Image 1: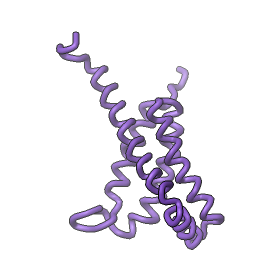
Image 2: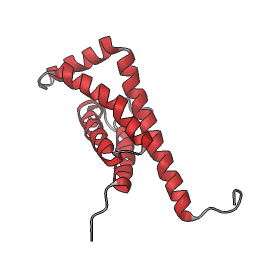
Image 3: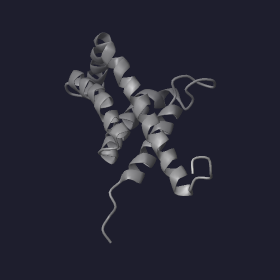
Length: 138
C-alpha cells in the first residue's frame, strides 16, 4: 500500500537511514575538499598537528583525510557502521576540543567557528553507532 499510513518501525528505519546517509555525505564532503586541495590543506593541517605536539603530524592529517573519504562509504553501504562512526566520533571530538572549543559555542551569529555543529555531528554519530551496534547475546 503505497499511499497508506506506514508502520512506526518503517518510519524509524527510514529516519535512521536518512541520518546515517546525511552524516556520511557531510563528512565525505569535508574530507573531499581537504583532499582536493591536498597542498596546502593536508600539509598545513599536518604542520598544525605537529605544532600541538602530535608526532608525524602530516601522517595523522593524511590518515584523517583518507578516513573521511573511506569510512563514509561504509556508512552509506551500511557495513561496519558502528566502527566507522566510532572513528568519526574520535576525530570530531578532537577537532571540537582543539579547534572549536576555544572559539566558544556558536558557529555563526553570537560567535564564530564555535563547536555547536561538531556537537550536533557527534550526537548524530552516537545515535547511528548505537542503533547499529551488535546486540549482546542474552
